[in-house]
Length: 379
Image (cartoon, rainbow, N blue to C red; front, side, top):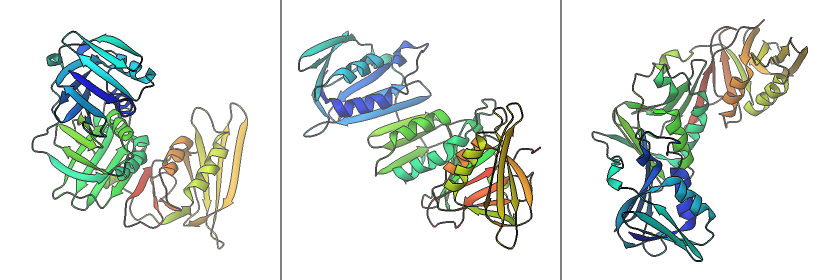
């Protein structure tokens, strides 16, 4: 094999792929990249058996790769990354045989061992009987940002440790929950002929998030065993989480008549100021809502009896309903409010003990976020 690669795009791809490489593996071959040079260009693959990521460097003209001699090798991933990071030249030339590879730049060269590519696990990204849909990169990135924070950590319930992609003829919803909160991102423009779904583990969702940010579309293919995401020449293939996701639509609050309308950024600022004095163990804040002829008021308070600290802030509020007191964990409330990009949110309550529903004041025609948050007992 002999190939010439442009350093900048190569480094960008290698930095993305290295996140798949396990720190330690019972199979040493998984600590390598599979590099393959063909008539179509150069592909670089990383895998930990559960997740496989492949990047394509096209060849010819102004493209980032030039192939002089075709071939396939398995090359130590971290050695390759460390070398490329230090090279200041615009291009490097990689020459390899069955035993070693040479990486040359304008003023020097390095030599590293290579391994039998036949030992590398199968890397086919093809999924049989796949269902597919396309989604704009920015839409998917916004959806991941709006749901990743609420993913559960309890591995006893694996399906709660990922994001649920719920595709229907009426639109796509990304859903996550840790049993204390439920985050939903609804994308009406992405539809499928028949309802289908899968769960993407949090780690793979985080890897996918790191690949996004362009202006194109992401092609998503999935079945009951795996899902692939193709964006900007990079393919992420991941096993889906086995199990049935809870019927999340059944737990959505309905018919709540007590409603607070607020600017999420302004409300988050109050919560941040007050929560400085909250207990470091419970992180609890107390919200008191009062309705009156002038529109209502809101008082948010926190205290830590162990350190004799307390804080309270009272502000006018657009609140309609009965007077009530409710408690929340401040970090949960801040993460929830941070997931909204709209000017105002509508927070609906039944009483001080039941889950609250947070959604945009006016549901837009495009994509939007909604959340459910469980309160905590107040003293």
